[in-house]
Image (cartoon, rainbow, N blue to C red; front, side, top):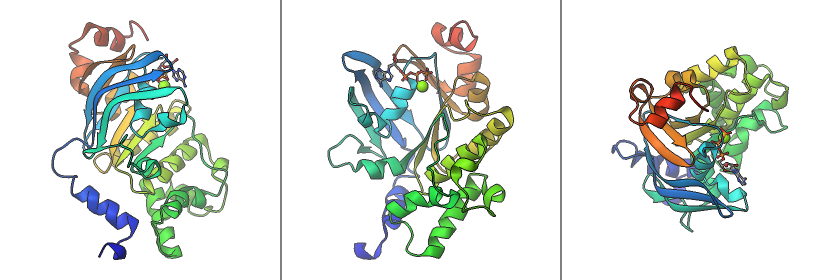
Length: 273
Ligand SMILES: Nc1ncnc2c1ncn2[C@@H]1O[C@H](COP(=O)(O)OP(=O)(O)OP(=O)(O)O)[C@@H](O)[C@H]1O
Ligand SMILES: [Mg+2]
């Protein structure tokens, strides 16, 4: 009976139907994005699969963040932004009128450049999503979700004795892992990360990269990065954007060692950017 299933059961059930059929998690077809009259993304089509980490690279202003935001409709929050084309998540059109955007953003979580924990306790930061989505039926169940999410985000050992402390009292690297734990807590299908390490020192960066390795396969992960070494280290697929176009998309090793397009080669060899 449907009524006996919680939201998370339904979500997990729907997901299970799609997770092993080899279809892409996300498919974008002929996507263009405008800010007013200005076209920031021009006719981009791309498949993003479950098992690989996908890196978006390209010079500043080429549209990486703009395109990333189309994947969970964060562009809806920008009044002048307009999206054309079609984007599906597990075959479902995310821009259809029936799509619940709050639900979508739980399924496609986002981690930003600057860690943005809520001014709440560490516990409440992670419990926030499960609470609004009704994913736990008891206090102990909620505590279980918080612990599991913090463990998965590689932060549990550092915070388990101070869960009541404010999330904003953590170091930058810890805050970023808290934000990842917050995204994980609602059991997303996809995690989008927009330059998640650019405000972090090398040690905190290494921890996030390690975490991305560990999360790979459990969630489809897309990461925007300006750091070529990072793209090479963490991703298996790389998409190179230039002036709003998706110039080249393929295996990271091929993009970095043997790109097809001159523009890709120029960028990865540091000729511009
Ligand atoms: N809110 C906005 N309103 C108007 N134009 C915008 C807005 N956000 C981005 N743009 C423009 O869209 C283009 C793409 O910007 P975007 O932020 O997606 O690039 P990016 O590749 O993420 O760059 P960076 O590497 O510097 O973060 C740029 O020309 C930018 O000025
Ligand atoms: Mg950006």
